[in-house]
Length: 400
Image 1 (cartoon, rainbow, N blue to C red):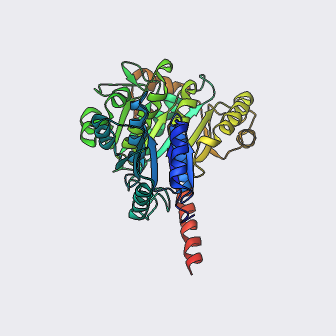
Image 2 (image 1 turned 90 degrees about the horizontal axis):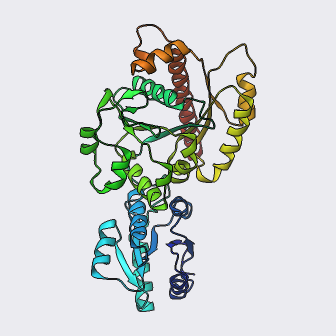
Image 3 (image 1 turned 90 degrees about the vertical axis):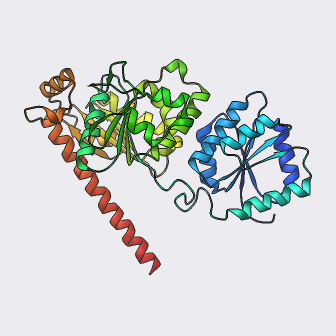
């Protein structure tokens, strides 16, 4: 084996897999992964620190191959993506190049010539596409906060809406996008929506997605905060839609400093599978109900494989009463993750805000719910700042 540069090959065709192994003849280790699970493809690139990925061109499903190429290039612009095919038309070649492929190798290529080309591609980009903090990944990526629950009785729409406004208040000057997967035709969260753009529109035409389009089509509810209707019907959540969502979401991450998402419990498995690796903070929201705590623990454990090790798994208890058991410590222990905190019910103010279609912090009277939420986010920011300071201190000591 010449070196330890690992090549990733996205292939469903067994014949092309065998041909590639024989052609490279052990010169480089190869990791194969199926094209049907895009999240696994991205995880493989990240885990191997690969700077070269082959994507086989499926004549029966050419669009799938193009989506995989596009997703890889959107995630790691410096990654060398090369198409593998038994045969290819001029039109297919052009489409793969437009998607981001740098070359195309045919299965009847000369063995020695192909090995030389692979060696050239590997030496061209010695900075790995997915290593050292994703050195070749886009320089700007949003902090992704995903809020969900295990029961439809928990109003994560209102909680997420309040989270987004509190975050915008705490971080003036930051660009924040709030996505509501339970949006209706007239409302995003509990607010009137006049936006001309929905998440579904972005999935259909991700090629035209840019910051100018987003800023024009999505109004600011307060300075820096925009909202997007993200309702995707269950019946439409196909494999192709998963790839489209990953591509569009990767683009949005480059346009905003923070993305806050309300994910309906019925859609949570789908969203976690597609963007789990991108999530910075996963906030599991429950009522102070023991059954929900146990369900939350099971659900979080089932998502472990889909989430990054750097993802903070947090518990948020809504409708909490101090003097009524179980206590916050007991719920935290039952769920098995640290607690972001607990929010009071404050039903009168919630009802006023929801029916008026305004954020709770703009009510003419003081809201215990809003005060508590702002204090929770302030404490969380302070804890993260202290952790970053401690990490930098340890790194400095290590270098010394």
